[in-house]
Length: 119
Length: 113
Image (cartoon, each protein chain N blue to C red):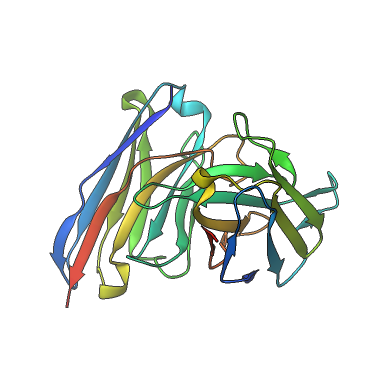
């Protein structure tokens, strides 16, 4: 069974940094593209960033480009999101999601980790 | 960016009746190379992460009840719940994966009448 467990969220001041982690299990991690999708409280879904299975290719939403960095450690089945220069509008629950075939729809979601940025 | 819109914002349907949700993309999401529409549907229940229901506009994810179906092509898509059950109360989102950034619709809330 696929398990995705996020961690690293918390309260941070505007301009600060956080590093989110996602521990994956139940599948061959290196064979799958992975993504981060966020959801502000009471709001809809926003795709944030994606990374290929090898880690060679990364993609970002314009709203986070230049501030966030996605990476992965396939030997440890881990996905990361380094978030710098955080803004109030980055406050959201961040979900780690699996892309089953590299097409960028998402078949498995973690429970998410909550990020709150205070201004 | 491709903008996704959904209608209605919310709907209430009697148990056992049909629920229909529409999703429109600002440009076509049809891949001519494989003749498939890059459109997915998700269900999100309160306090839970989203769950994939449908991909390629009409392919049901494994384990999803067959009362859920997707249709449409190009820019206009529909999610149909043929016979609404109590456990279907949720917010439903469409998502295009034709081009980055991969965008979601604003969601449609489905309740029991």
